[in-house]
Length: 197
Image (cartoon, rainbow, N blue to C red; front, side, top):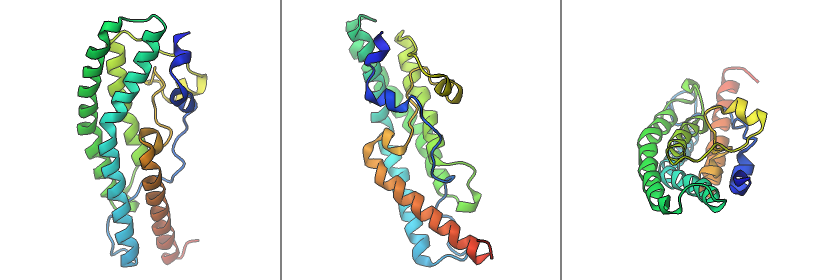
């Protein structure tokens, strides 16, 4: 079956779970009981993560399309002559994903941590619509997914949903960890300042 050739990235994403990092947070208001150094670090890490995500989105869309489409063509699906056309469509979709998702991530990470109502990975996952659109237009059939993946991500027929920031780009692994740790540190200090454990 052609889907078996999609590769290790798809296998890793098959059981993608919600990001374990606590819901997103960021720079926000440094006057709310924060040490200025803590506030500065959180802002630096948040904006670094936002910039990294923004930069990574176009290439991730292109890789996602290229990997799935190539696997399909290799097993006799589609027309090999369509490769360049599909690649061009993926390039365009990647830039549209960046224009749509990048600012949403940046806006989220610019809010105070207590005003967050989500996390940046959840926003990043909306970008799945862009490679999906290209693959569907190219006639690529959906791949087989397990029931959990289908239930959790019903609009992801090609199993592209990032399970972590590193799935978008391995270079985002460390920025994601630094931001998550800084956010958790600030959250804990605030709660302790309010007399909570």
